[in-house]
Length: 373
Image (tube, rainbow, N blue to C red; front, side, top):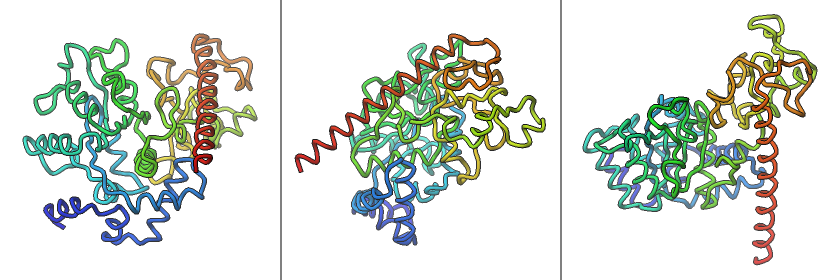
């Protein structure tokens, strides 16, 4: 199918289901995809038919993907996504009108595509941002197409229906924001306070979580419930520690003492090697990476807490956490980072309280809606 045909079909408003059918994706595979994404969103299996029904009717939304101060790791994760594959995502589910790394257009033609999307679909397109935004010197440390990253973010994110900040750089500033932060790097929400932003931190972002957010938006017409850091609760509502396959070893006090020792080979807990799982909220243990084959802890490396704000400056990667209340199997842990301990304890309390309040609100909203019906 050439470019003109694709443009024509896009204008005709084919639904996602029909576009999938035209590319040889069976109805059964489509429903399987809906079930997978429903599970990723932490919704009950009974919601899968509703997701399928919504995607049957929805037209492909335009999507703009911006890259700022980044390593391109989130795009690499997208290219290796499994649910769906990047081909399905680009060709069928979304109309990716601008993505510097994977689009065919370049130069003035690429910028023209971007300007056209912003103008014709104002308030209707989705924006994905990868990388932090430099704020110092009026944004002089980053420029694309003659515009600074800051100016571009304000223009594109400010006119989008919603902006998805993928990766820790776009969410919280990431490594570019590490002290002394020479470029004044910040996340999208800080750079464009008025934009509707959802954060998907991680180095890199899990492409399954990105797909789930997009599908949630298409199905329900809104972003999913968020935590205090602007992250979706379905992906960041539980700690790494809660679902880690090494948790039984932690509970039994079986720790790796040195890299490559017998305990390491047996898959024992990496807490003493600096694992930040007890202080990190993410669904890595359940979603995993590379077609759900593995994730860092399963591969033998402790969690570095990359989905948390300022993880790079908070605690040395290979120094273990102090005994946070509720996790202290071993009482003789080094007395380090007492301020960090208090911060983690406070974060747990705040996160739990915010989750409870949101659940109560969602329940009240549902009850009100049911009463009106």
